[in-house]
Amino acid sequence: MLTQIKGLHHVTSMAANAQENNAFFTKTLGLRRVKKTVNFDDPSVYHLYYGDEVGTPGSVMTYFPFANMVQGRRGAGEVAETVFSVPKGSLGYWKERLGNHGVDGVQDRDAFGERRLRFFGPDGDGFLLSEVEGDARQGWTGSDVTAEEAVRGFHGVTMRLRDGGATAELLKFMNYEEVDRQGTTTRFAVRGGNGADVVDVEVLPGAAPARQGAGSVHHVAFAVEDRAAQLEVRKALMDTGFQVTPPIDRDYFWAIYFRTPGGVLFEVATNEPGFDRDEDTANLGQALKLPRQHDHLRERIEARLEPIID
Ligand code: ZN
Image (tube, rainbow, N blue to C red; front, side, top):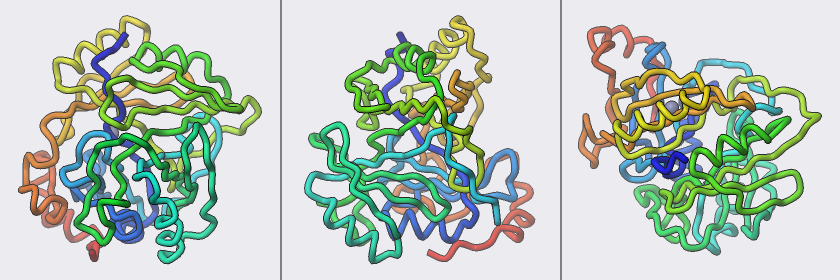
């Protein structure tokens, strides 16, 4: 069993508009933008990271905003919902706040003994805010959301699959155990994790396949402490028959990727070196940061990217 895995590291999705995406996460949800960089494989596109003060693994929602990208279609074979943890008693505040920020169709969706609000992001992204007891993580308080209400990071994700059997086996191999079941959804959790501990698997045998687009989760990343742990995980996954990429330097963490039986792309990312490796904590996310291989193109890249007004 891969005891090196300690919960989620980040969730990466796609959007159609960088400005709208930035406003939704920093102003509506009150997260901190902890990095403004580009897609390393396509530097004409931003890669925006939102999280707590320092972008602690387990708090980091990231986006590739592809201008005018067509919306995805929710369905089977994807992460359908990203679930954020908020303090107990804060959902009334959040319901009002979401309404004030123009988020329509906010629904009460209590489950697994948790009070939850369900709503959609600017591109139809599926989100939940869940009141989680005993989550000691500190949310970002640099916005107008106070510590009593601030998003503390992920609680987890909900994967929607046609057949959950092989994915359940994989999650158990990845240090998760089945802890609850409700209707068509099975809850898995990692013990002693970083707070972003839950993966819910909803099985809908008749569901049409999801179509990736704006508002879709591109991949979900799980956290390991360092590169040595990542190599152990990689070897164990490959010994089990998974095709795993070599470790890739993402500047703020190292990443390996593999496709899971249900179709969802998984990543395993290191907690090191973190988002403060190339800028001060006080100024995280302000300047456009480029990976070394693209820095000589800075002028061209900056000219093509739409500036983001905070
Ligand atoms: Zn990633």
